[in-house]
Length: 94
Image (cartoon, rainbow, N blue to C red):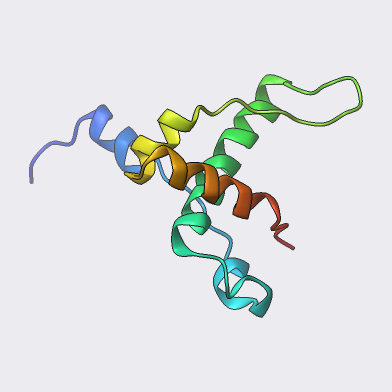
């Protein structure tokens, strides 16, 4: 059996979580697949913001995720990322 490096283990354990509700709930049936993936990526960053205590004076959590970074992640152009972000904002997963 080949040896496995620490880096291989760390890389294989990194993933984005996508709520099943996005696929099972009729409410999200019109949500495009790339929006579901963007939701998971942005939710991951949101959790990092919570961990870092990035909360404003009224208790809202904020995150910074550049459009260019999301473009690279999703392999789409800037206009597409802007449209995805706008569509994703209107969905609240329950």
